[in-house]
Image 1 (tube, one colour):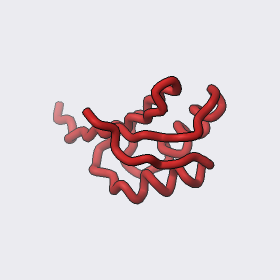
Image 2 (tube, rainbow, N blue to C red):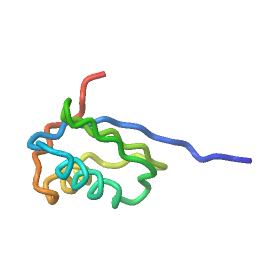
Image 3 (cartoon, rainbow, N blue to C red):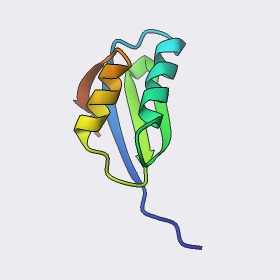
Length: 77
């Protein structure tokens, strides 16, 4: 069985304060083409996206801002 390449990137999201905020962000990011999984760590204000393609940062920014939160760039490793 052949599996496609997977990409993973973690971003900082400001303004998430509760489980509802995290769910709203997760839903917005999950709607991006190629996204297979989104993990939100509310306490750290981060969102990790696993996808089948490289997702342009501008697409991530747009999804986060449309959900009502502040995109603060890529998280440091």
